[in-house]
Amino acid sequence: MLPFLLVIPACSSDSDSDKGSAAKKPTVTATKTPSADIEAAAEAKRLGALDTPSLEKVTLSGKSNGFEAKKIATAEVAAGKDMKADKPECQPIASLAGGYTNIEPVSVVHRSLEPTEVENATVGSMWLASHSEKNAKQVMKDLRTSLKECPAGFKTLGLTYKSVDQLKDPNLGDEAVGYRITGAVAKQSVPMTYTVVRSGGVIAVFYGVNMLDAKKAAIPEPVVKAQLERLSTQTG
Image 1: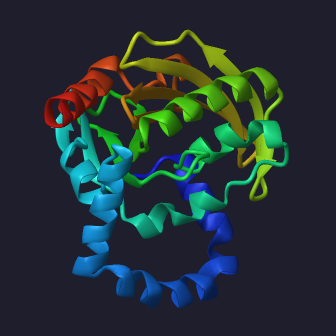
Image 2: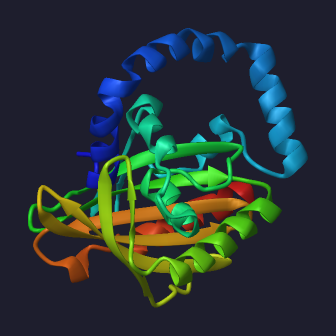
């Protein structure tokens, strides 16, 4: 099950982007050559970042701390790249709502997060974006500024996010930010909680929603810590 923010943008833009997506597919396939992979790996190494295969290896998959992490196909989240806020100061938040960072990463991988216990009503997703450490720090700086300047929310792709509320920063990774945005879905308010963590040059984003209790919407810290531990173990 994909979270609301990834499902809705994809549904909103399908009718407009089918032709474009179809036209782009051969190009994407054509670039997946051994030489292109070697060049991508070399560029990632130059920047001190991880290429896509390396990032996949350090991203959670399977069951961990009450949730199951499942791979999400790139095509399912591609529409999120078009999340352009109607207010420029809100763009870093809008980009994360679409499943990407506001600065283009070297690589990015996505996972859905589904509870393994029936009594757990929290669902969500996570994604890791690898940057140079300089750019990763800038992503966090931009996000903090956006949270201060965008309390009244924003609109994008025909969707309305009514408010943005900064939460207490978690003590995770090299630095971390917590916040909640409230979206309007079918005339219903849906609070969505984000935990954004920087570990070196990797930005790890954890999104959660709980339709029964908004206070329990955040992805639990044990899940976040399990991902950070995996990241530090395999990149350290």
